Length: 457
Image 1 (tube, rainbow, N blue to C red):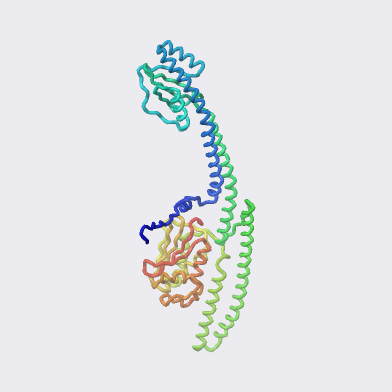
Image 2 (cartoon, helix red, strand yellow):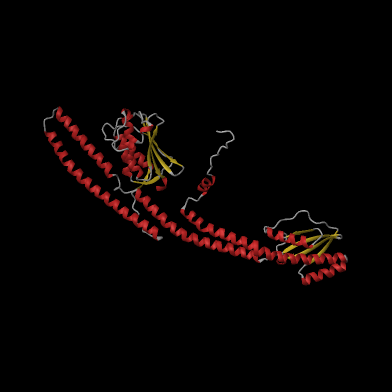
């Protein structure tokens, strides 16, 4: 950098970050902010103009009149400082000026003074008294609700004046503020009621979309609300109908394909069973069996589990069913259940199939598999399967979920399978609003963790 050159400092985008961090997240809060904030700014501006111009001007005139009356009484007393003169002045002030006057002989003015929340009131009274009086004075506008306490130091002591507040300032200012606050409160309440009704329609649409994503039928959903929300809801219903029609057509097509493929496979099995049982025949039987298995896997992946109804299922019973199913296959599964049972709304057979698939996959590559459940922050149910096999490298875990993917030799592609097990399992879990993730197991192998929202229960 050249000598004498000034280094440019990087610009820090502070305010956009602060606004973004503190800006409301919900639609209702944002709409309320859009409506209420301009009203509040307008009310503040009107109030400021009112107090700064009209109210303070009127108060100044009233304070000047009160200060003039007090100055007259002080001068009249100082000219003849006798009790008879003070009584005469006090009677005149009370009848014509609404002033109460008393003398505190030998007294001194207070040192401290409490300030009114209306700074303009203190400011105008202080200015008016300062212009009219040469003597030292003190006043308090907060001690008595409806009166102003003003004291003036004289040679004999302190002259105390008690005057109604409406002689010092315009009391209609309070009424104006109450009207402004009341109007703001009423407008805000009405806005909240109308906005809540519109936001409820959007929330209902969001819930219907979420339920459809989980394969649940929301029979009671109907478009309502503003025109734009109704249009979005009607578009969602049309999309839902198209997707359901596509699923039905795909299921029908797959059923036909399944039937057409199984018929020749059945004939081949029969012919092989009746043919000469030699080594070539045995290899052909294995090929036919593998073809049948592959067809079942392809159909299961393409069909999904959308046709199964959702039931309220006990997590403990689900884990017991998986444990028994694995035991019938000749494996001993280490199971750790929840302390308290939990129920969730799931497609039981689909989730059971996903869990069994993951457990059997663990036994395929390892000797010991552990199956346990956890509840995280009261919001998520975790069903975790740990094995002591070779595991999957972190950079290849996401690839393992891709249909027909082939992994490295350490976990060699489900020797009997076609690379669809993990894809089917994740598809089942995500259809329930959850997810399936892979990680390193504490046992050194692979950890498969299924998360399901507890709110479904």
